[in-house]
Length: 117
Length: 114
Image (tube, rainbow over all chains, first blue to last red; front, side, top):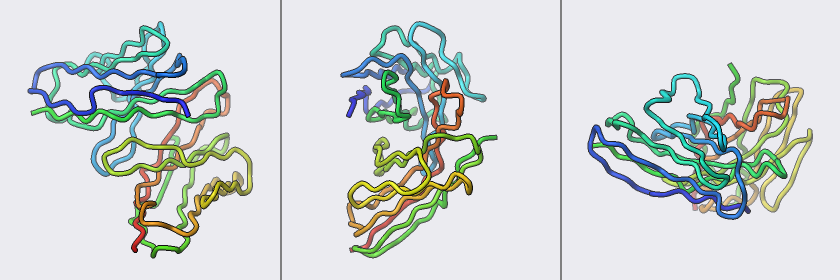
C-alpha cells in the first residue's frame, strides 16, 4: 500500500512555543491530506483538510490561526501548532488519499504525540 | 449531523471464537465503508472496505453491509490475541463523490483472551 510518513513521532514542548509536524506521501502524489487529532480513548476527530496550493479547509470549532496548515507540494503538508498549551497535548495523525484511483481508503502516517508542559 | 455509531465495548472473546463488531451510520446516501484497526498508541491501519450490500470476505475477516438498515459489521473468525485492538468504523458520507472525508466512529475495543 501507499506510504505516508509523519515526523516527529514524539515532541515535548513548553507552553507558549510552536511545534511543526510534517506529513509526507512517499510513493504517491497527494493533492489532499487530512489532519486528525485523537485524545486518549477517543476517536479520530478531523481537524482540517489540506489542499495542495490552496488554503486548508478547517472543521467547525478548529482555530485556523492556532493550527496552521501548509500544503506547498504534492507530497508534503505541515501542521504548526502555534502558542501551544497543555490542552493541545494530543495524538496528531495525518492521512492522504491516492485520488488518482480513489477508493476512499486513507493512508495514515505514524502519528505525532505532542505533550505540552 | 452526520454520525457513525459503534458500541465502545470492551468486547471480550476467547481465542478461536468469532468476534462481531457493529456500526450504524446516519447518512442514507453514504457510499463507501471502511474498517480500520488501531493498536494502542499507533495510527489506524485499514482492514477492509466495502461498497455493495452483502458480504465481503478477506481471510479471517468478513465485512457485511446493509444499506437499507444503515448497518455495517465486521466479523473476525478464529480470533487471535493479536487481534486485540480498537476497531474503527469509517464512512464516506459524501454521496456526491467530491468530498473525500471519512467520518469515524468512536471505535470498539476488542480483547481476545488466550
